[in-house]
Length: 463
Image 1 (tube, rainbow, N blue to C red):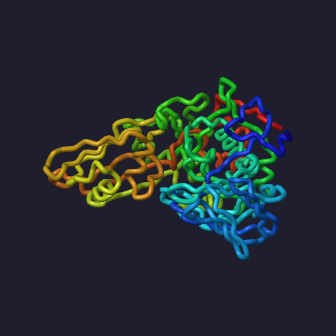
Image 2: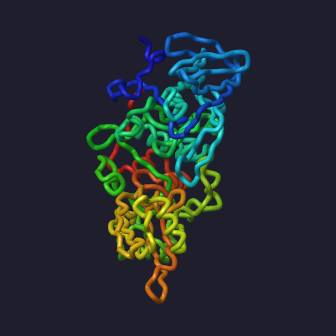
């Protein structure tokens, strides 16, 4: 069999294969609750295939609707129908490589599921589309070669306006994270990884640029290897806030080749805060050193007024290096009742206290104390940085690297709660805004990768 015609799938790929695998990306998930999916074919011939092997050509440019029926899925378009079948697959008669705007335009795809930036937008996808009938609705999977997929990742995670050395570095990191396949995600679903922040963003070819395609080609097959010569589980997040986090603080276990990093040139004042503790936290968040730092993710290197040019399409412009969120006690109490089943009987919030932090200042545990309706004290522990961010914001808190500032009244009651914070995301591994800052300062892709993963080395996994 020709490897180009029958590529290795992600579930069977190993470094010994020395070949590019294909990847299956969940683009529309059962959780999205879609009873139907609509898409528009490009001016090229495509063919539908059912579970029983039956096929049906579909005219170029057709507007197709896949919808759930009592017997599975039915495809319909002007002048034709096909199905029912538990699974339908549509693919081009000739391969459509990833290029700006190439492929099938799928309408109203969710991006940012569950986060404050969630929205729907059309996405254009190269490769094949596969549809599954699930109890909650239609599941749509995009299958395509890994290198084509990466061109859609690096222009979704950040924009194609980023410097080419950043795009190359992001490509190496995204490729490594995917090939490592170290995190147990979506194991019961018919795809390898989803298209969103749960895994890594992928939004197809609509925002792709030729420089991004060239960046993928210029780093083809290049991966990070950990000290044991295994493909590195190369996690990354949007902004570390000046110091990156240990994986133990995020996932509860170490990861070979991933450790804390001072995200700044040697000698920068941010280095004196390693590790961030309760004693130096306020100075880390608001000290005079912030006027002089050249931390790569700081606003001195990547100004707020310029960042909109470089962020992904679904992101919003803000100061992610330092930020604050404020609540009246009543608003935070309402939020906690909505977010925590255990807080349904919350009568009065009495305290919010960080009980454990990582080296970057990220809260790992937060203890909430309140009085219930009978006046009895209740203590509840938020025991992960993800859960902390999920509960303490109506959408999703930028990061858990924050100080809690309580304003109390004369009788000791809480009047307001302010979270003064740093960074965006879990903070482990590559800091995307910091990597952008490094590229803007003239660093190349290899220097960027090895800055964030200093115990790793670069190697080509396949030609």
